[in-house]
Amino acid sequence: MKRALLTLSSMAALSACNMAPHYVRPAPPVPAGFPSGPAYAPVVATEKPGLPWTALVTDPRLRTVIERALANNRDLRAALANVEAARAQYQVQRAAQLPAVTGEAAATLSRRNDDRQNSYSADIGFSAFEIDLFGRVKNLTRSALESYLATEEGARATRITLIAETATAYATLAADQELLVLSRQTLTSAERTLALVQSLNGAGLTGKLDVHQAETTVEQARSDIAANVTQVAQDRNALDLLAGAPVEDALLPPSLEALTGGIAKTPAGLSSDVLLQRPDVLQAEHQLKAANADIGAARAAMFPKISLTAAIGVASSALSSLFTNGGFAWSAAPSASMPVFGGGARGNLDYSKAQRDISLAQYERAIQTAFQEVSDALAREGTIDDQQAAQQRLVLASQRSYALADERYRAGIDTFLNSLTSQRSLYNARQSAIATNLTLIRNRILLYRVIGADFAGG
Image 1 (cartoon, helix red, strand yellow):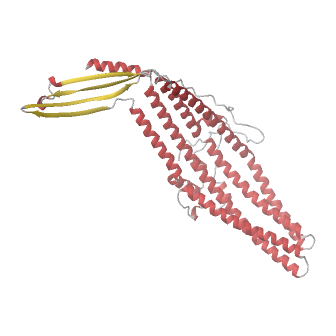
Image 2: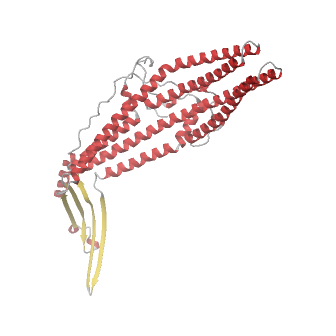
Image 3: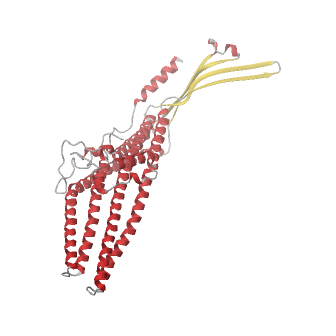
Protein backbone atom coordinates (compact mmCIF):
# COMPACT_ATOMS: atom_id res chain seq x y z
CA MET A 1 0.00 0.00 0.00
CA LYS A 2 2.82 2.39 0.91
CA ARG A 3 4.44 1.64 -2.43
CA ALA A 4 1.20 2.54 -4.23
CA LEU A 5 0.89 5.79 -2.33
CA LEU A 6 4.50 6.69 -3.11
CA THR A 7 3.87 5.98 -6.78
CA LEU A 8 0.77 8.16 -6.77
CA SER A 9 2.60 11.00 -4.99
CA SER A 10 5.50 10.86 -7.44
CA MET A 11 3.20 10.97 -10.44
CA ALA A 12 1.19 13.84 -8.99
CA ALA A 13 4.38 15.82 -8.37
CA LEU A 14 5.12 15.65 -12.07
CA SER A 15 1.84 17.37 -12.87
CA ALA A 16 3.47 20.79 -12.56
CA CYS A 17 4.28 20.65 -16.28
CA ASN A 18 2.36 23.35 -18.20
CA MET A 19 2.30 23.43 -21.98
CA ALA A 20 0.29 26.62 -22.34
CA PRO A 21 2.13 29.59 -23.90
CA HIS A 22 3.35 32.12 -21.36
CA TYR A 23 0.76 34.89 -21.25
CA VAL A 24 1.91 38.49 -21.60
CA ARG A 25 -0.70 41.26 -21.81
CA PRO A 26 -0.56 42.69 -25.36
CA ALA A 27 0.47 46.33 -25.69
CA PRO A 28 -2.61 48.57 -26.17
CA PRO A 29 -2.94 49.50 -29.87
CA VAL A 30 -3.89 53.10 -29.03
CA PRO A 31 -2.00 56.28 -28.04
CA ALA A 32 -0.93 56.62 -24.41
CA GLY A 33 -3.06 59.73 -23.91
CA PHE A 34 -6.40 61.01 -25.12
CA PRO A 35 -6.55 63.52 -28.02
CA SER A 36 -6.05 67.24 -27.52
CA GLY A 37 -6.89 70.24 -29.66
CA PRO A 38 -9.56 72.91 -30.18
CA ALA A 39 -12.42 70.43 -29.56
CA TYR A 40 -11.06 69.20 -26.22
CA ALA A 41 -11.10 70.83 -22.83
CA PRO A 42 -7.87 70.91 -20.77
CA VAL A 43 -7.51 67.86 -18.51
CA VAL A 44 -6.50 68.31 -14.88
CA ALA A 45 -3.67 65.92 -14.07
CA THR A 46 -4.88 65.24 -10.53
CA GLU A 47 -8.29 64.00 -11.62
CA LYS A 48 -9.04 60.34 -10.89
CA PRO A 49 -10.62 58.75 -13.97
CA GLY A 50 -14.20 57.61 -13.80
CA LEU A 51 -16.97 57.89 -11.24
CA PRO A 52 -19.20 55.51 -9.33
CA TRP A 53 -22.79 56.04 -10.44
CA THR A 54 -23.76 57.26 -6.98
CA ALA A 55 -21.38 60.19 -7.51
CA LEU A 56 -22.51 60.71 -11.11
CA VAL A 57 -26.21 60.98 -10.24
CA THR A 58 -27.17 63.34 -7.43
CA ASP A 59 -30.80 63.93 -8.45
CA PRO A 60 -32.85 62.01 -5.83
CA ARG A 61 -35.66 61.04 -8.20
CA LEU A 62 -33.33 59.62 -10.81
CA ARG A 63 -31.31 57.76 -8.16
CA THR A 64 -34.48 56.04 -6.99
CA VAL A 65 -35.35 54.99 -10.55
CA ILE A 66 -31.83 53.62 -11.14
CA GLU A 67 -31.92 51.66 -7.88
CA ARG A 68 -35.17 50.07 -9.02
CA ALA A 69 -33.63 49.21 -12.37
CA LEU A 70 -30.66 47.53 -10.68
CA ALA A 71 -33.07 45.49 -8.56
CA ASN A 72 -35.68 44.59 -11.19
CA ASN A 73 -34.25 44.78 -14.71
CA ARG A 74 -34.50 41.37 -16.43
CA ASP A 75 -31.43 41.84 -18.62
CA LEU A 76 -29.30 42.38 -15.54
CA ARG A 77 -30.89 39.36 -13.85
CA ALA A 78 -30.01 37.23 -16.87
CA ALA A 79 -26.42 38.52 -16.81
CA LEU A 80 -26.06 37.65 -13.12
CA ALA A 81 -27.54 34.20 -13.76
CA ASN A 82 -24.91 33.70 -16.47
CA VAL A 83 -22.23 34.50 -13.89
CA GLU A 84 -23.61 31.83 -11.56
CA ALA A 85 -23.70 29.31 -14.41
CA ALA A 86 -20.08 30.08 -15.36
CA ARG A 87 -19.01 29.79 -11.72
CA ALA A 88 -20.67 26.36 -11.49
CA GLN A 89 -18.92 25.20 -14.67
CA TYR A 90 -15.58 26.29 -13.23
CA GLN A 91 -16.25 24.38 -10.02
CA VAL A 92 -17.08 21.25 -12.01
CA GLN A 93 -13.88 21.51 -14.04
CA ARG A 94 -11.80 22.28 -10.97
CA ALA A 95 -13.10 19.11 -9.29
CA ALA A 96 -11.43 17.10 -12.07
CA GLN A 97 -8.03 18.00 -10.60
CA LEU A 98 -8.78 15.95 -7.49
CA PRO A 99 -9.66 12.25 -7.31
CA ALA A 100 -13.31 11.43 -6.67
CA VAL A 101 -13.25 9.17 -3.62
CA THR A 102 -16.03 6.61 -3.36
CA GLY A 103 -16.92 4.04 -0.72
CA GLU A 104 -18.57 0.70 -1.32
CA ALA A 105 -19.80 -2.22 0.80
CA ALA A 106 -21.09 -5.54 -0.56
CA ALA A 107 -22.24 -8.95 0.60
CA THR A 108 -22.79 -12.19 -1.33
CA LEU A 109 -24.78 -15.01 0.27
CA SER A 110 -25.19 -18.35 -1.51
CA ARG A 111 -26.06 -21.92 -0.61
CA ARG A 112 -25.72 -25.13 -2.65
CA ASN A 113 -26.97 -28.31 -0.99
CA ASP A 114 -25.29 -28.20 2.42
CA ASP A 115 -22.42 -26.03 1.23
CA ARG A 116 -22.97 -22.45 2.42
CA GLN A 117 -20.71 -19.79 0.91
CA ASN A 118 -20.81 -16.16 2.12
CA SER A 119 -18.51 -13.25 1.30
CA TYR A 120 -18.39 -9.69 2.64
CA SER A 121 -16.32 -6.73 1.49
CA ALA A 122 -15.88 -3.00 2.18
CA ASP A 123 -13.50 -0.71 0.36
CA ILE A 124 -12.76 2.93 -0.41
CA GLY A 125 -10.89 4.28 -3.41
CA PHE A 126 -11.07 6.23 -6.64
CA SER A 127 -11.56 5.27 -10.25
CA ALA A 128 -9.83 6.49 -13.42
CA PHE A 129 -8.22 9.55 -11.82
CA GLU A 130 -6.11 11.31 -14.46
CA ILE A 131 -2.54 12.02 -13.42
CA ASP A 132 -2.09 15.44 -14.98
CA LEU A 133 1.55 15.02 -16.08
CA PHE A 134 1.30 17.44 -18.99
CA GLY A 135 -1.16 20.00 -17.58
CA ARG A 136 -4.22 19.11 -19.66
CA VAL A 137 -6.67 19.18 -16.75
CA LYS A 138 -4.92 22.15 -15.20
CA ASN A 139 -5.27 24.20 -18.38
CA LEU A 140 -8.89 23.17 -18.85
CA THR A 141 -9.53 24.39 -15.32
CA ARG A 142 -7.68 27.62 -16.05
CA SER A 143 -9.77 28.11 -19.18
CA ALA A 144 -12.98 27.57 -17.20
CA LEU A 145 -11.80 30.09 -14.59
CA GLU A 146 -11.04 32.75 -17.20
CA SER A 147 -14.40 32.12 -18.87
CA TYR A 148 -16.09 32.62 -15.51
CA LEU A 149 -14.17 35.86 -14.91
CA ALA A 150 -15.08 37.04 -18.43
CA THR A 151 -18.75 36.40 -17.68
CA GLU A 152 -18.42 38.31 -14.43
CA GLU A 153 -16.95 41.31 -16.28
CA GLY A 154 -19.75 41.00 -18.81
CA ALA A 155 -22.27 41.32 -15.99
CA ARG A 156 -20.45 44.42 -14.71
CA ALA A 157 -20.58 45.92 -18.20
CA THR A 158 -24.29 45.15 -18.36
CA ARG A 159 -24.78 46.89 -15.03
CA ILE A 160 -22.96 50.05 -16.15
CA THR A 161 -24.88 50.06 -19.43
CA LEU A 162 -28.18 49.67 -17.58
CA ILE A 163 -27.38 52.66 -15.34
CA ALA A 164 -26.42 54.78 -18.35
CA GLU A 165 -29.46 53.76 -20.39
CA THR A 166 -31.82 54.44 -17.50
CA ALA A 167 -30.35 57.88 -16.89
CA THR A 168 -30.45 58.65 -20.63
CA ALA A 169 -34.07 57.54 -20.92
CA TYR A 170 -34.93 59.71 -17.91
CA ALA A 171 -33.26 62.77 -19.48
CA THR A 172 -34.93 62.08 -22.84
CA LEU A 173 -38.31 62.01 -21.11
CA ALA A 174 -37.53 65.37 -19.47
CA ALA A 175 -36.60 66.88 -22.85
CA ASP A 176 -39.70 65.57 -24.59
CA GLN A 177 -41.88 66.88 -21.77
CA GLU A 178 -40.38 70.33 -22.32
CA LEU A 179 -40.96 70.05 -26.06
CA LEU A 180 -44.61 69.23 -25.32
CA VAL A 181 -44.91 72.28 -23.05
CA LEU A 182 -43.24 74.45 -25.73
CA SER A 183 -45.59 73.22 -28.47
CA ARG A 184 -48.61 73.98 -26.28
CA GLN A 185 -47.29 77.47 -25.51
CA THR A 186 -46.70 78.02 -29.22
CA LEU A 187 -50.23 76.91 -30.00
CA THR A 188 -51.67 79.38 -27.47
CA SER A 189 -49.59 82.21 -28.93
CA ALA A 190 -50.45 81.21 -32.51
CA GLU A 191 -54.16 81.09 -31.73
CA ARG A 192 -54.01 84.63 -30.30
CA THR A 193 -52.20 85.81 -33.41
CA LEU A 194 -54.77 84.09 -35.64
CA ALA A 195 -57.63 85.75 -33.76
CA LEU A 196 -55.97 89.14 -34.22
CA VAL A 197 -55.41 88.59 -37.95
CA GLN A 198 -58.99 87.41 -38.44
CA SER A 199 -60.21 90.52 -36.64
CA LEU A 200 -58.07 92.78 -38.84
CA ASN A 201 -59.26 90.92 -41.91
CA GLY A 202 -62.88 91.38 -40.86
CA ALA A 203 -62.25 95.12 -40.58
CA GLY A 204 -60.66 95.17 -44.02
CA LEU A 205 -57.20 96.04 -42.68
CA THR A 206 -55.47 92.88 -43.93
CA GLY A 207 -55.98 90.25 -46.59
CA LYS A 208 -56.88 86.60 -46.54
CA LEU A 209 -53.26 85.63 -47.15
CA ASP A 210 -52.33 86.75 -43.63
CA VAL A 211 -55.16 84.66 -42.21
CA HIS A 212 -54.02 81.53 -44.02
CA GLN A 213 -50.39 82.10 -43.01
CA ALA A 214 -51.44 82.40 -39.37
CA GLU A 215 -53.44 79.19 -39.69
CA THR A 216 -50.32 77.29 -40.81
CA THR A 217 -48.59 78.12 -37.53
CA VAL A 218 -51.61 77.00 -35.52
CA GLU A 219 -51.89 73.68 -37.32
CA GLN A 220 -48.15 73.04 -37.14
CA ALA A 221 -48.27 73.54 -33.37
CA ARG A 222 -51.24 71.16 -33.10
CA SER A 223 -49.36 68.54 -35.12
CA ASP A 224 -46.30 68.96 -32.89
CA ILE A 225 -48.45 68.56 -29.77
CA ALA A 226 -49.83 65.25 -31.04
CA ALA A 227 -46.32 64.00 -31.91
CA ASN A 228 -44.91 65.10 -28.55
CA VAL A 229 -47.74 63.49 -26.60
CA THR A 230 -46.94 60.22 -28.37
CA GLN A 231 -43.21 60.61 -27.74
CA VAL A 232 -43.67 61.29 -24.03
CA ALA A 233 -45.86 58.18 -23.72
CA GLN A 234 -43.22 56.08 -25.50
CA ASP A 235 -40.51 57.55 -23.26
CA ARG A 236 -42.53 56.48 -20.21
CA ASN A 237 -42.84 52.97 -21.63
CA ALA A 238 -39.07 52.77 -22.23
CA LEU A 239 -38.33 53.98 -18.71
CA ASP A 240 -40.77 51.48 -17.20
CA LEU A 241 -39.08 48.67 -19.12
CA LEU A 242 -35.63 49.66 -17.88
CA ALA A 243 -36.84 50.06 -14.31
CA GLY A 244 -38.60 46.70 -14.44
CA ALA A 245 -41.84 48.22 -13.09
CA PRO A 246 -44.01 51.31 -13.71
CA VAL A 247 -42.44 54.59 -12.55
CA GLU A 248 -44.95 56.76 -10.74
CA ASP A 249 -45.49 60.43 -11.62
CA ALA A 250 -43.82 61.63 -8.41
CA LEU A 251 -40.47 60.27 -9.67
CA LEU A 252 -40.63 61.89 -13.10
CA PRO A 253 -38.19 64.73 -13.90
CA PRO A 254 -39.59 68.21 -13.08
CA SER A 255 -37.51 69.89 -15.81
CA LEU A 256 -34.46 69.40 -17.96
CA GLU A 257 -32.72 72.35 -16.32
CA ALA A 258 -33.14 70.84 -12.85
CA LEU A 259 -31.76 67.54 -14.11
CA THR A 260 -28.66 69.22 -15.53
CA GLY A 261 -27.51 70.03 -12.00
CA GLY A 262 -28.19 66.44 -10.91
CA ILE A 263 -25.71 64.81 -13.35
CA ALA A 264 -22.01 65.31 -12.59
CA LYS A 265 -19.12 65.51 -15.05
CA THR A 266 -16.98 62.36 -15.28
CA PRO A 267 -13.21 62.97 -15.38
CA ALA A 268 -11.31 60.96 -17.99
CA GLY A 269 -7.77 61.52 -16.65
CA LEU A 270 -4.62 61.90 -18.70
CA SER A 271 -3.76 58.30 -19.59
CA SER A 272 -5.67 55.92 -21.82
CA ASP A 273 -4.57 53.06 -19.54
CA VAL A 274 -7.86 53.53 -17.70
CA LEU A 275 -9.50 51.77 -20.66
CA LEU A 276 -7.71 48.53 -19.75
CA GLN A 277 -9.98 48.37 -16.69
CA ARG A 278 -13.18 48.84 -18.68
CA PRO A 279 -15.43 45.80 -18.15
CA ASP A 280 -15.79 44.85 -21.80
CA VAL A 281 -12.01 45.17 -22.29
CA LEU A 282 -11.34 43.00 -19.23
CA GLN A 283 -13.93 40.54 -20.53
CA ALA A 284 -12.07 40.31 -23.84
CA GLU A 285 -8.75 39.83 -22.02
CA HIS A 286 -10.13 36.99 -19.88
CA GLN A 287 -11.40 35.35 -23.07
CA LEU A 288 -7.90 35.73 -24.52
CA LYS A 289 -6.40 34.07 -21.41
CA ALA A 290 -8.94 31.24 -21.69
CA ALA A 291 -7.95 30.68 -25.33
CA ASN A 292 -4.29 30.68 -24.26
CA ALA A 293 -5.00 27.96 -21.70
CA ASP A 294 -6.92 25.95 -24.32
CA ILE A 295 -3.69 25.78 -26.36
CA GLY A 296 -1.95 24.18 -23.38
CA ALA A 297 -4.75 21.63 -23.02
CA ALA A 298 -4.62 20.84 -26.75
CA ARG A 299 -0.84 20.37 -26.63
CA ALA A 300 -1.11 18.09 -23.60
CA ALA A 301 -3.71 15.97 -25.42
CA MET A 302 -0.97 14.95 -27.88
CA PHE A 303 0.91 13.17 -25.07
CA PRO A 304 -0.05 10.00 -23.15
CA LYS A 305 -3.06 10.27 -20.86
CA ILE A 306 -2.27 8.44 -17.62
CA SER A 307 -5.05 7.33 -15.28
CA LEU A 308 -5.02 5.50 -11.96
CA THR A 309 -7.66 3.38 -10.29
CA ALA A 310 -6.93 2.40 -6.68
CA ALA A 311 -8.77 1.01 -3.70
CA ILE A 312 -8.11 -0.19 -0.16
CA GLY A 313 -10.52 -2.26 1.86
CA VAL A 314 -11.28 -5.50 3.63
CA ALA A 315 -12.82 -8.81 2.55
CA SER A 316 -13.88 -11.88 4.45
CA SER A 317 -16.14 -14.89 4.28
CA ALA A 318 -17.53 -14.04 7.73
CA LEU A 319 -19.01 -10.73 8.73
CA SER A 320 -17.56 -11.04 12.24
CA SER A 321 -13.99 -11.16 10.93
CA LEU A 322 -14.43 -8.52 8.19
CA PHE A 323 -12.35 -5.87 9.94
CA THR A 324 -9.59 -8.12 11.34
CA ASN A 325 -6.01 -7.85 10.12
CA GLY A 326 -6.33 -10.85 7.88
CA GLY A 327 -9.07 -9.24 5.81
CA PHE A 328 -7.07 -6.21 4.59
CA ALA A 329 -6.56 -5.79 0.82
CA TRP A 330 -5.47 -3.08 -1.61
CA SER A 331 -5.18 -2.61 -5.34
CA ALA A 332 -3.74 -0.04 -7.77
CA ALA A 333 -4.20 -0.12 -11.54
CA PRO A 334 -2.46 2.61 -13.54
CA SER A 335 -3.16 2.87 -17.26
CA ALA A 336 -1.96 4.99 -20.15
CA SER A 337 -3.46 5.82 -23.54
CA MET A 338 -2.18 7.78 -26.48
CA PRO A 339 -3.50 8.36 -30.00
CA VAL A 340 -1.33 6.56 -32.57
CA PHE A 341 -3.05 7.32 -35.87
CA GLY A 342 -5.29 10.20 -36.96
CA GLY A 343 -4.84 13.97 -37.00
CA GLY A 344 -7.53 14.90 -34.50
CA ALA A 345 -5.12 16.04 -31.77
CA ARG A 346 -3.09 18.14 -34.18
CA GLY A 347 -6.25 19.65 -35.63
CA ASN A 348 -7.50 20.56 -32.16
CA LEU A 349 -4.20 22.30 -31.45
CA ASP A 350 -4.37 24.29 -34.68
CA TYR A 351 -7.97 25.20 -33.87
CA SER A 352 -6.99 26.40 -30.38
CA LYS A 353 -4.25 28.59 -31.84
CA ALA A 354 -6.68 30.10 -34.33
CA GLN A 355 -9.16 30.80 -31.52
CA ARG A 356 -6.37 32.51 -29.58
CA ASP A 357 -5.61 34.73 -32.57
CA ILE A 358 -9.31 35.61 -32.87
CA SER A 359 -9.48 36.47 -29.15
CA LEU A 360 -6.36 38.62 -29.48
CA ALA A 361 -7.90 40.59 -32.36
CA GLN A 362 -11.14 41.01 -30.41
CA TYR A 363 -9.24 42.24 -27.34
CA GLU A 364 -7.32 44.82 -29.36
CA ARG A 365 -10.53 45.85 -31.13
CA ALA A 366 -12.26 46.36 -27.76
CA ILE A 367 -9.46 48.72 -26.68
CA GLN A 368 -9.60 50.67 -29.94
CA THR A 369 -13.39 50.98 -29.73
CA ALA A 370 -13.14 52.19 -26.13
CA PHE A 371 -10.54 54.78 -27.12
CA GLN A 372 -12.72 56.12 -29.92
CA GLU A 373 -15.82 56.28 -27.72
CA VAL A 374 -14.03 58.21 -24.98
CA SER A 375 -12.36 60.53 -27.49
CA ASP A 376 -15.71 61.30 -29.15
CA ALA A 377 -17.34 62.00 -25.78
CA LEU A 378 -14.44 64.26 -24.75
CA ALA A 379 -14.72 66.18 -28.04
CA ARG A 380 -18.40 66.76 -27.36
CA GLU A 381 -17.73 67.77 -23.75
CA GLY A 382 -15.08 70.26 -24.82
CA THR A 383 -17.50 72.25 -27.00
CA ILE A 384 -20.97 71.72 -25.52
CA ASP A 385 -20.74 74.62 -23.04
CA ASP A 386 -19.97 77.08 -25.85
CA GLN A 387 -22.79 75.65 -27.95
CA GLN A 388 -25.24 75.88 -25.07
CA ALA A 389 -24.32 79.50 -24.35
CA ALA A 390 -24.66 80.39 -28.04
CA GLN A 391 -28.04 78.66 -28.17
CA GLN A 392 -29.28 80.66 -25.20
CA ARG A 393 -28.19 83.90 -26.89
CA LEU A 394 -29.96 82.75 -30.05
CA VAL A 395 -33.22 82.26 -28.11
CA LEU A 396 -32.89 85.74 -26.58
CA ALA A 397 -32.19 87.34 -29.97
CA SER A 398 -35.13 85.48 -31.53
CA GLN A 399 -37.43 86.68 -28.75
CA ARG A 400 -36.42 90.29 -29.37
CA SER A 401 -36.78 89.88 -33.14
CA TYR A 402 -40.28 88.42 -32.81
CA ALA A 403 -41.40 91.08 -30.35
CA LEU A 404 -40.23 93.87 -32.65
CA ALA A 405 -41.73 92.26 -35.78
CA ASP A 406 -45.07 91.77 -34.01
CA GLU A 407 -45.14 95.40 -32.89
CA ARG A 408 -44.34 96.62 -36.40
CA TYR A 409 -47.14 94.45 -37.83
CA ARG A 410 -49.67 95.65 -35.29
CA ALA A 411 -48.66 99.24 -36.06
CA GLY A 412 -49.13 98.62 -39.78
CA ILE A 413 -45.47 99.33 -40.52
CA ASP A 414 -44.45 95.83 -41.67
CA THR A 415 -46.07 92.80 -43.29
CA PHE A 416 -47.41 89.82 -41.39
CA LEU A 417 -44.91 87.55 -43.15
CA ASN A 418 -42.00 89.10 -41.25
CA SER A 419 -43.84 88.58 -37.95
CA LEU A 420 -44.66 84.99 -38.89
CA THR A 421 -41.07 84.26 -39.88
CA SER A 422 -39.77 85.65 -36.59
CA GLN A 423 -42.29 83.57 -34.65
CA ARG A 424 -41.19 80.37 -36.39
CA SER A 425 -37.52 81.24 -35.83
CA LEU A 426 -38.19 81.66 -32.11
CA TYR A 427 -39.97 78.31 -31.99
CA ASN A 428 -37.08 76.57 -33.75
CA ALA A 429 -34.52 78.28 -31.49
CA ARG A 430 -36.33 77.08 -28.37
CA GLN A 431 -36.50 73.54 -29.74
CA SER A 432 -32.78 73.61 -30.50
CA ALA A 433 -32.03 74.91 -27.00
CA ILE A 434 -33.86 71.95 -25.48
CA ALA A 435 -31.99 69.56 -27.78
CA THR A 436 -28.66 71.14 -26.79
CA ASN A 437 -29.43 70.82 -23.08
CA LEU A 438 -30.31 67.17 -23.62
CA THR A 439 -27.06 66.62 -25.53
CA LEU A 440 -25.10 68.04 -22.59
CA ILE A 441 -26.74 65.64 -20.12
CA ARG A 442 -26.54 62.63 -22.41
CA ASN A 443 -22.85 63.24 -23.07
CA ARG A 444 -22.10 63.33 -19.34
CA ILE A 445 -23.85 59.99 -18.97
CA LEU A 446 -22.07 58.64 -22.05
CA LEU A 447 -18.67 59.62 -20.68
CA TYR A 448 -19.45 57.71 -17.47
CA ARG A 449 -20.34 54.61 -19.49
CA VAL A 450 -17.46 54.62 -21.99
CA ILE A 451 -14.80 55.18 -19.31
CA GLY A 452 -16.41 52.31 -17.40
CA ALA A 453 -14.53 52.97 -14.15
CA ASP A 454 -17.45 52.44 -11.77
CA PHE A 455 -15.18 50.68 -9.30
CA ALA A 456 -17.15 51.67 -6.21
CA GLY A 457 -20.32 49.89 -7.30
CA GLY A 458 -23.45 51.19 -5.67
